Each structure stands twice: as C-alpha cells, then as structure tokens.
Image (cartoon, rainbow, N blue to C red; front, side):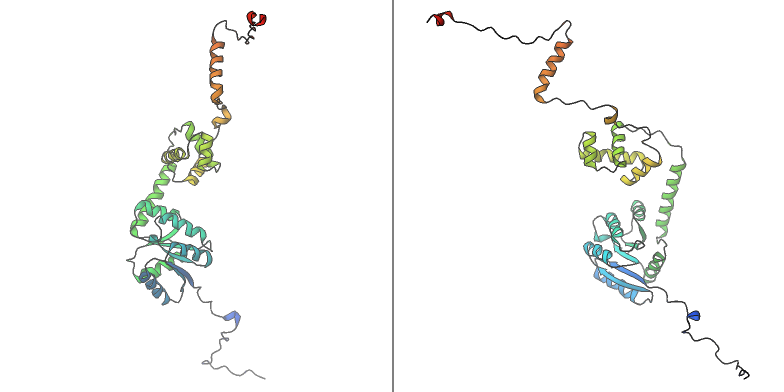
Length: 297
C-alpha cells in the first residue's frame, strides 16, 4: 500500500513524551537559608525570592544558635547570614561553613560596609559574597544566582582590596627573603605548633605560662606575616624553618632543681670540694663520758 502523501502543514514532530526528544530538564532550584535578626528584612527577602521560579527558601532563623542547627540539618545551596547575629562574625562564619550539610554550600554575608582587613578575612574564611542592607531586590537575586553558580560577589572597592591583597602576597613570595631572627624560645614554640600541641602543652615544654606562649605567638605571627596557627605550620613546612633544628631538651638536658632540703648540703659540699687540699671527713663518734662520782655511789 502506497504511503499517504504528507501535508506540509501537518505536525510531524514526535510526541513530547518520547524520551529521546524530551525537552531539557527544568533548571534546579536554588535552596536558600535566611539567617537574619530583623524579621522585616528577612521576610522581605523571602517575599522577593518567592517571586522567582528558581529560588526556594528552605529555612529562616533569627539567632546564631538556630542558624547553626538549621545549616546542620537542612541541605542548602546558599546561606544568607547577617553578621550581627554574632559579636564575632568572622568566627561565626567559619563555624556556619563547617557545620553545613553540603560541602558545596555557599555563604553570603549581610553586613555593614566592611573594611579592607575584614573583607579579606571574610573571604579567607569561605564567604563568597558580601552585601549590605541597602542592596536592591534585583541585585539581591542576581547575587544569589551568581554565588550559587560558583562566582564571588563583591562591590568594586572589595574587588580592589582582594586584588591588592593577592598582589602583596605575590610580591612577598617573589622578593628576596630576609634572614629571620628567631630566638631559641620562639623556635621551640614553632616546633610545638607544627606538632599540633596546644598552648598549655607548649608552655609545659618551654617551662613558662600559657599566657607567655600566647604573647610569643603574636610576635611570631608578626615576624612571619601569618595570621593563625595553621598558616604558621604551613609556612614552617614550606620554608623548611625547622630543618636542622634540635629542640633544647634534646640538645642539652635541663638542670635538675634540687629539693629544699638538698640545697644546703649541695652548696656546702661544693664549697668543701672547691677548697685546696680539702678532704671530706666522716663524722667520728663522740667518746662516752664516765662520771666516777656517780659510779662510786
């Protein structure tokens, strides 16, 4: 039977249900956690995101404790975190990133205009975007999408600060290294840090207090241009700072401290032995005294 002539106006496309001709899957929705102490601002962001087909608010919190619980229990792609939820926002940022269910979770910080050091520190701790409360709805949505896609969101000033920080780091790496002058105690403390010892353990090894160790660490950070224990350990390994160094306890034993009762005897023995021709005489027993008058009685 001859095939029926095909009309040019007929729809000859296969049905859309055919798996090989199906349309591309819908774009995955971006899951967002809103952590902000101001209910009006938090609800405003949620209202903005609800009008976008690819943005989905999965949790809202208004305290740091709630936020840490939410990020540990709720998978999210982006966390909008207000810096004011913690008196130490940099440390809070690190803790939030550490507790996130998904390792790929991105963190956007909502804060007052930050300075250069704060901006660089936030980025070093894992922040991928920095916003202020004056951000427009359009830029807020765009920021979330860009950060979720793996980009970094900063204003022009923030970008300049980051570029300058990397440029300074590159110059320090390429510049001739000056001979660092580290004291015996500083080297011993660095050795303890590279071994993963805590300050109290290092203090016990050095023979000082924990506060003194903290003071030395601050001086060491300034000398080596590092900011924390991890960077100090990495710097030490990269620059072979401890190559050939033998800690003092292994090189020369510490003098034994005599007990209070031993001090006088040790001192007297040393004086006697130091005198020319001196001899140590053993004590002789005293002769017994006999009272004849008593015996006679």
